[in-house]
Image 1 (tube, rainbow, N blue to C red):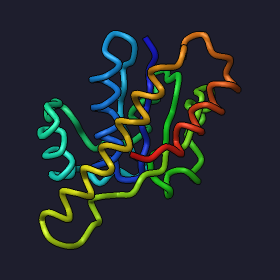
Image 2 (spheres, rainbow, N blue to C red; image 1 turned 45 degrees about the horizontal axis):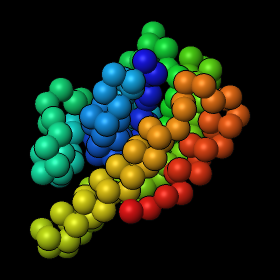
Image 3 (cartoon, rainbow, N blue to C red; image 1 turned 120 degrees about the vertical axis):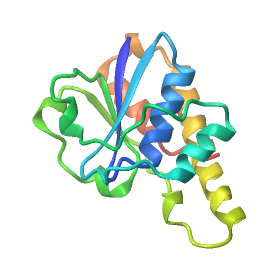
Length: 159
């Protein structure tokens, strides 16, 4: 089983949706976690509503620091927001394959309720496309440099 850490700055929205998608689509193959470099301490309600609309679990998530995973070996670390992308990961994460999958933060969208829901749905769809595409790869057998390259290519896909 591969351990994947999805990282964002606040760990309240995109990283949580990524965690949910990996654990749903990668059952038995992937164990995903999410964390933030500067967690805000709560999960965005729009993210939970989006998970619920798609039939994914909405319980058990927490906004936590990547430092909470100091003793949990990670195989892959994926950043999903621009601000976390440029940050230096803690030393214990340097052995993991790292990739960047930047995606818009729907939690900052202003507008009508429909516009906000549409933003969450777009982010969810992009993350789901990337997760499913990644899970089609022979992850366990790929050389590290090839895996890094492919994961970063997947990070360019949009729904």
